[in-house]
Image 1 (cartoon, rainbow, N blue to C red):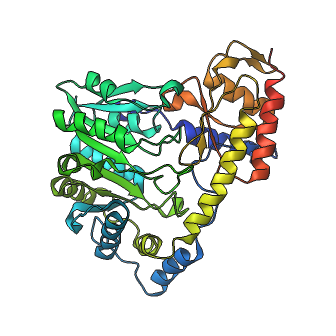
Image 2: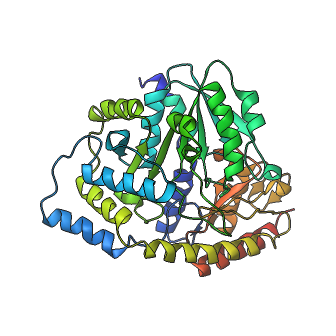
Length: 396
């Protein structure tokens, strides 16, 4: 019999949709997938070359459990350059992807029964990882009227003696919304007042539009920095999802706790990927800008096409590469393949009827919406949204 802990965990709804779409494609069906949370670009050549060179140079052995000193230095340099933050190398850990980083932070901070405050919509893995460390999720619901962002007052009202950790994700997956400096300062004031920790997931920080500014909450003073654990990685900005390199920056006590745990679980991240990540962070950044320009064009296109569809409304994301349209106007309708009652049935019938894969919003804690990734070509976006428009015209 498997453990109670493992039985509490729900499978990732994003991976489930992607896997189903892939199965349909393998069976010869022409499926357009908007589910994947990864860039469709290849890893830039200079980064791949660094990984190849590491293999050729025999850099294929164990490293320190929490990463190469050279990579930690590159991360420290990046945090100083981009956020104006100074971190000693022993305050930085390198992990097996940012998802692993998030879990390590949970395990280092949260005890059984501790409350973890999670704004919704949220990345699907946050509540599940809270379950893995026997914590309790406290969900703060938001909607389009607040641009899917919590307020300091909402946070204040949610804090109890059991509150231990707040998760912030800006730019956000799935909404693409970005917290302003003023919004973060108000939230930081509440956090410092109550002495809870913040996990600041900044994995999409380089993907911003319309002049939006990325601000790390750790920038807003010594007190909030001491309570903040920054989580980041190379997967999104550098199209290195398969290389599996994430990292944390925190106070030294948390970093040492992560180091102790990682030494007995995964040990070091892949040595070859670490050398490639050094090149990603320290080398030519123009490929990041090229990808961003492409995403910006696609964002404009998908917003225009979505908002032309009756019954669907979509706010403009300020970052990342996701659209999160409201689809609840179609609930209560019936598709040729069955009734639509929620985001799951909407996406199921959309996949069956139009062969378009999207992720139900309920997986992100917002059942009125669905998530579409625009990390795909303009032609694919036009075809896919065109299919959605034709399909909703069949609903009665």
